[in-house]
Length: 392
Image (cartoon, rainbow, N blue to C red; front, side):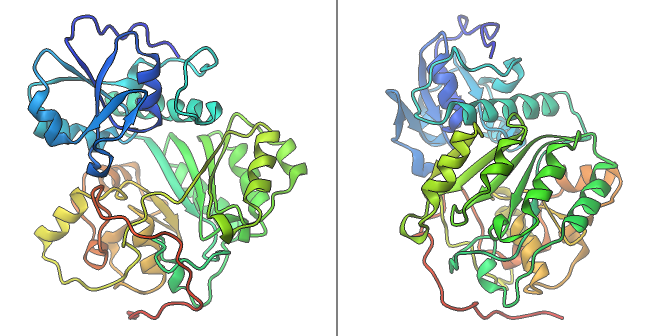
């Protein structure tokens, strides 16, 4: 990565917006010492990386000056820019991804203990997404979640993707996934990453054929598989995969899975970029309920939601989040065309839906997923599907 052209000498102090992998990597490799991290998630306030502390937005506003600079490191820059304009009106800021122009992190420093291949993947995502946003590339999407299974090998009662409500969960066929993705990309130039989700993706017996399809698809840069590590992988399939395009992220549920280490070792031994992490940021958002919100209240909920840009493809539609997709599939919310757009929509419709709307009707039935929401104990298991109200 070449960040030498990012000239920081003319600024008094440097702040990094975003306490994630990319921000930490930049702090490790910046020519100028970083003063503080800033993060929207107030739960991160007081944490530190390599001696650099995290401030909340309110804490940062008290000490930052016009002579300082904010480096933006989150991928979802479209969510960060309004915050910067509102909270740091007179402070200069730059998008880190604009100053990245390579994919070699071998010579860089890494004090985060994260897998270097996974950091490289994160920086590639940052570069593609920041440049597309700054250059106003209307036919570029950062990521699309593809629901390939409603089945899961765990039964978490607070799953934010609502798997705990499915009485007869099903898999989506390879042919359906292929058809719908081809329809979507007829009107989209490029998608940086496709994320295979569920449920547990490896509950779908066609998972390897699905991975094969996305690995050879020229419309995407990366395919990311999200797994709970409960199902062993087929080593012979991993050996033949294009490792530069495939990424895995494994949630380690401890005693709930006896195969986590096997899955992780198989990926590392095959040089697949992988992140292994404990359950993170679980909030009480796995609830379907009619909250009888006003339009103003739904806009407020949508504005602070951390999941509103998790574009999700399911049942021939593109949704703003997995909650809306699964809630509608479950008939747990009234069917409303404003919750989604058809997968074969025009570029103009997709652009408006993914960038310009202020809320979706599904927001009325969601508890919300704000960055500062209280965390709950993750992965508490239920013995049977949870009852809920169905709409015809």
